[in-house]
Image (cartoon, rainbow, N blue to C red; front, side, top):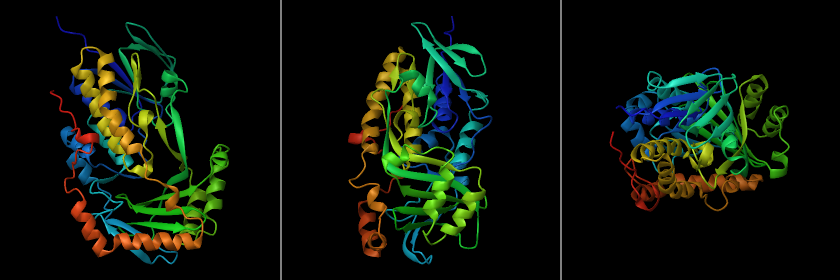
Length: 402
């Protein structure tokens, strides 16, 4: 008699959710994804698919699609208030913000959706409102009023995961790093090039403009904000705070202020990490930013989403008991997550000087790092393998038989 397929519900249709759905389907699970937005959320900024995430993408057969959707960014330049370049880091060199596989977040989301939509049930414009579980099943109540049962439920709905709260209460902690960031897409002008442009202003502000492959420019506004002020933020004051932070910043700040004024699609949030004492409880588990957001400043959010989804699906497929699969997933991945979340001393504050003198010092240091002698030394010690298995203690990416 044929064994009944295990039913799995995944909350979140961004990167971790569809990646997990892809692998679970490959292993014979019946998979559904619920997404509270009425359609795919295709906005967002430039992200990169590097290290072990690149290997997972290759195993999924989407590496060529990711390459084809490349933003065209050729590297990162540090500029001063007059838009003069003070340092350049080509993507082929060491210490570059730009990686080989740069892609707009929404383009990657669409690629993942396209390769899963025929085999995975997507449920848009809905979300989980109640969860219950027993020895036999998990019972899910949706905002639409429907109630259904599943064998497993996985939260993959981001750093502000509502599903995580239903599963674990307030057990997980958002560790705010003292930094706020805002993302928006703006009209391209003659000053925009194929380089990402990083501008450091006084009063702990950084502006970043990056090219995309859609004829627009992706902008981010970043600034330090004390914990007590961050806790007072609400959606009605965020645009005003952005405008106040742009005032007097120099460079392209007036242009950004105009764009902020007219934009209705600005992502604004505090930068932080999710620290969770456990990633599963009974039939419930978490993956990606919902479980272990490393913060955008690490550049590893996409990597953890890909690798976490790959390992979680593989461990569930290779263990008869889901409890053992969840435990093995956490045992394998947690050391790597903790290594990624461990930030160097002074980060992010060291990159956000308060005074004009501090800005001058930062630009001087960056100029030295971009110099030819330093770049040559860095390239000698850097990895030449784009799929470097950077898991902690040289633990390789696990291999699972389909």
